[in-house]
Length: 127
Image 1 (tube, rainbow, N blue to C red):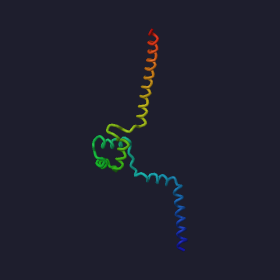
Image 2 (cartoon, rainbow, N blue to C red):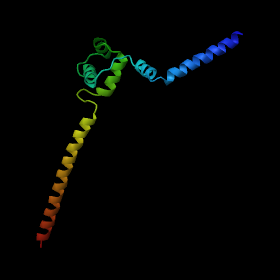
Image 3 (tube, helix red, strand yellow):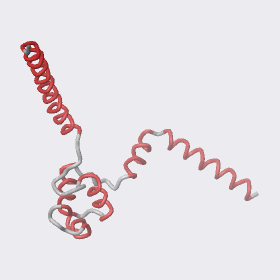
């Protein structure tokens, strides 16, 4: 008889879990539990990485002073602090770089056209 009860309890637990899975509030709770609640903005992460790459703190010292885990700081260093003075490229920096390259490309095309015309002019003057 105890076997039958355990089967009933097991199916009751499954039914409760099925209801929990369909509940959007519980889905939000599960998502929230994935993170410890601490979110840091990009500026903080870059500054933390600079402590190690530029200011010569050890990752452990910097992590303790900032109140983050050393593994988290190591990840930020990997992403944002590749070399001293060099930051990871963002979409905005890539857009600016693209705009500069397009302007340079336009200028070089104009110079090439001028040189073509000059070459044709001087080639036509030679006897």
